Length: 244
Ligand code: FPP
Image (cartoon, rainbow, N blue to C red; front, side, top):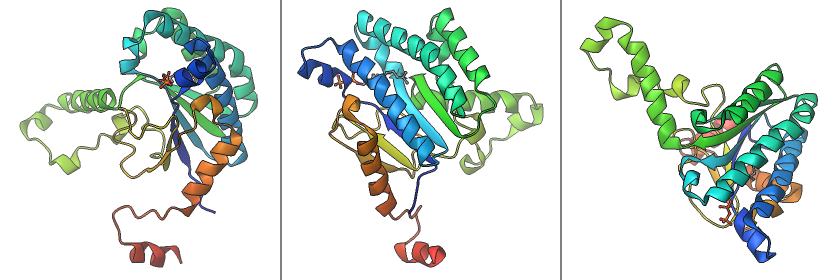
């Protein structure tokens, strides 16, 4: 059975889950943290090597101040409360995004969680926080240009677009591109998530709200992925010949 090496997730629907229960939105986010545990466990069981979660986008700062603050609190307490378990389970935690806007305390928690789990190899759990796919390409280009400017002769001629290799400069230069992107909550869009890296990803959209996305729902998404024929621009016939 075809299994993805890398699954990326847009965790949508926390607010609607809470509203349907006459609860504050933060209750939906808190329940969402539980689902993060479930999908991490599922990925470990299924030998999936990379799991990337879109926890907070560059646009999410536009939310009411109280909700932003609740999300920061949840993020900090999840880091403090879960890191030992992640470490014991062989999970390496990485956080990508423009982290400079977070409080010094949160930045310290992130740095120490990343350092503590740096030697783990079973599953790399990447949390995208204050992340945007357009920002990622911009910052990659800046890194690429900085390296070129260091060698004066390179400024004289611009390379062909195809020779500009931004991949090592992107936030997830350490991981293969996602094979599967799952978006919960009924919307069918990428919302400025991993724009470069999802060029050939299979996109799975489900109406299930994130707080309801349990191990069974994850199993259904993986079963759907297993049926997909991945062509990467080739014809179906070419791919099937290579596969046999
Ligand atoms: C989108 O639902 C969800 C978010 C913006 C936050 C996701 C955060 C978590 C699941 C908790 C923290 C995660 C980690 C990794 C510790 P929404 O609020 O847009 O839902 P709605 O569309 O129903 O309003």
